[in-house]
Image (cartoon, rainbow, N blue to C red):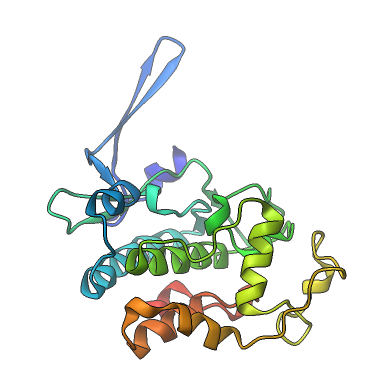
Length: 235
């Protein structure tokens, strides 16, 4: 709640009031009746590329506002993005897992972000991570809006890790410096040696060869967090 009170931006849901009831707190938000997951289900087909561009632009602007104030959302997924009835305005919602961060980065819990949108460093048990977790999640959403299916959909943490590695390659020190030291990284994992960028581009059938869209997605989906594009860079 305190983080939401700090954030005032057109791309972030507005917390209007906090009302104290008997043993309860009521949060009063501006009204939206649709989230992006329900909207996609209702639509029944992928969004147009121009609409995807508009949505991602708005979310990036809201996320920039967060990151500039040293706040990570940590739970970006379609059901946490609200869309208005005119299908134009989009806002980031649900800051229940959001955290403020400082330098040096401190240790965080790794049970954040719904499985399909969870960054590899979180899946592999890293206790120290930064704004790259939000960029990874947004990359997954970017793909899903254009294709109406998740980019990586594992049924367990290990299943999710393997889906990512199969597409982008099993990390080596060249691919991701320090990955071997992560708590959940095992030497026994299958070794997929692939061209991750090419594999990702092949999956993006609904980008219709739009090189800017493919380039932006591949920069968001780097395995090594420090190589991921920043929100500012993506904008």
